[in-house]
Figure (cartoon, helix red, strand yellow):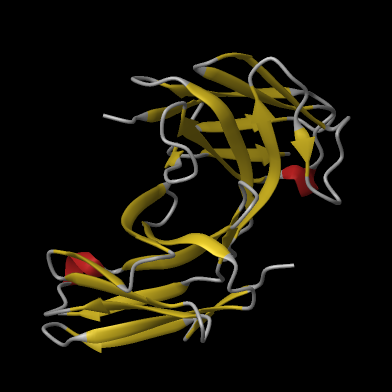
Length: 112
Length: 117
């Protein structure tokens, strides 16, 4: 059974700093890995999707990497802004099934 | 494009009543929709996979008779919480997979906050 873990559970950094969020998964047989953002009381906003054959994806200030062999993905946020404050979730799509397994989330606070 | 809506966004009901939540794909067709549940400050847990025209597949530990899922069309799936109790209070989120995208994409709805008093 796939297990997805995110460390740390919460992170506070001053505005302008670069930061890295970590995601680890136990079963490397994944079809893709996706990063989401969730604001309090809201649904999910998809940020980046990395297919299993890819190593990284970039969108603006965000860069996500994937290392299937080690079961890890990272989300790099450059030049953080207060508007980046949210909970970030990673999710792995199991190869051969249709199910997304979500990580435990990292609650990010950017301090102005 | 690829917008998923949920209705209602918030609902408060009394213990013992039933509540229906709708999930609609607004600008695409979806043969598969998913229902998730999220407890406060916790991650999303998949409850069931809903396929148009067939019975839903429930995850282990999810009561089929309590959480009734109907996927009557390519753009609509409903989740009915029957005889709701306070422990059913949660944030329910649906997602939909476009019919022509294979495994690559799921689009998520904004969620429904259910409070059972």
